[in-house]
Amino acid sequence: MLDWCTREVRWHQEHLRLFGKIHRVPRRIAWFGMPGVNYRYSGVDHAGCGMPAELSCLAERIGANHVLLNRYRDGADYMGWHTDDERGVQGPVHIISLGAARILRWRIGDKRASVQLSHASQLLLDGRVPHTLTRTRRPCGERFSLSFRRLNDA
Image (cartoon, rainbow, N blue to C red):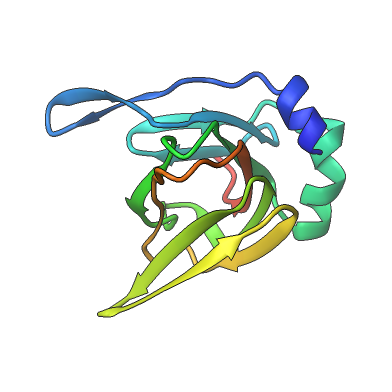
């Protein structure tokens, strides 16, 4: 799967509008989903146009119909604080981490916690919980995150 992510996936650079300014998203993304489903976040649609064979069996076992892939090229690529509770998401998000280890942080009320996501680790995440993958100055390799979701049909 790591080789497939590195060699076969067509990665995209997204831009988001925040506070009236356009910002480059600090990572690369790709997405796959069953036709008729759409994952919309930050005002951007990620419509499903089919699931490649490399992901379809896994998505079926997890019960997902959409997967968002993030490519963190090094410690400078990150994901800011956010939740994954957009309209249409059903149940938890199933995350598979590939490549270099990185720290995922989350908070519930005033309590904070973190976990190191190592290669081939899995995490079942309640999308309502705020979480982040912060940038780091320590040298680290490339990391891929595959986040499987069950979405309502469009």
